[in-house]
Image (cartoon, rainbow, N blue to C red; front, side):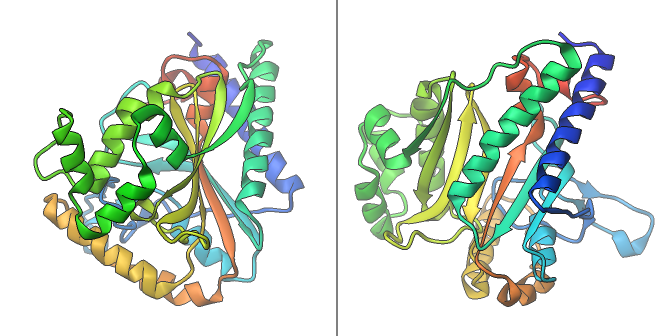
Amino acid sequence: MMNNKQTILYQDQAYYQIRSYFKTQGFVEVFAPSLILANTPDPYIDPLIVKSNNPAYKNWQLHTSPELWLKKSLSENLSKVFYLGRVFRDDISTNHHLLEFTMLEWYRSLDSLDTLIEDCKSLFLEVAKAWQQSTGLVAQMPKKYVIVSLWDLFKKHANLDLDNILDATKKDEFYLSNLLKESGELLVDNAQFTDAFFHIMIKYIEPNLNPNHATIIERWPLQLAALSAPCIDDPRYCQRFEIYYKGLEIANAYEECNDAKILKKRFTADNKLRKSLKKSVFMPDEEFFNKLPLLPQTCGIALGVDRLMMTLANSSHIKEVFFGSL
């Protein structure tokens, strides 16, 4: 257990190492606003709503991600940008999640997801260096980095063929949930594809990932594309990977979709799902859609800094690496 001073020193050194890495790579740091009109309408990410006596700020939100602002900055003839700062999500606090946490998000134009993986490997080293410099202790680095597809994980740990599931889901949204219920799994009433998918992830996939390895899970179903582009070789999947280490999701990366028509359609569907879940719906950011035609081919990634610091320090609770946490 670290005391407050050790936490402050660790944070200071880690943020310094991170910023130094991106500066040597030629990135521009973008200072995105925390207070915005509306976040992207992800059905499963809820923002904190701000109450103000100023009528101009009625029902504004704290950002859940700087994503839209970073992409807007790319339209200003910038090619490599990053954000390091706090974001806010209205979830239940746990030993690995707080309402306010530190996010690192960066984008590379005219580059690939493979480059983002190399960035992550370098950042693991930089934060490990920060831990050693601030405490004198050696960080618990991954023994190896393993790249694996979701199809392989579903087959190995749940004995399910994800290709067949996605084909069947085109005709029946409830195919996977019904399949699981028939095999004795317990799911919520009217469970849709995403409910059933994450049931499998939480019960069968995540517990079986080697905690000593950083596992890079690639090729996610298009239903979970968010703002990522479809795979060129198989439109059932999207160009996305996530990194897990010690049982925690550390990072989430996309080959970005720059097609405004596709994203507007996804946002509309997401708002429809939010409404069915009795959640508020969000107005679209028209400035973002107008900027999309100005963006080059881009890949981007968000990394949970506190979680990375936590795993490398072998901490049991995120509050140990986050000074001033609620």
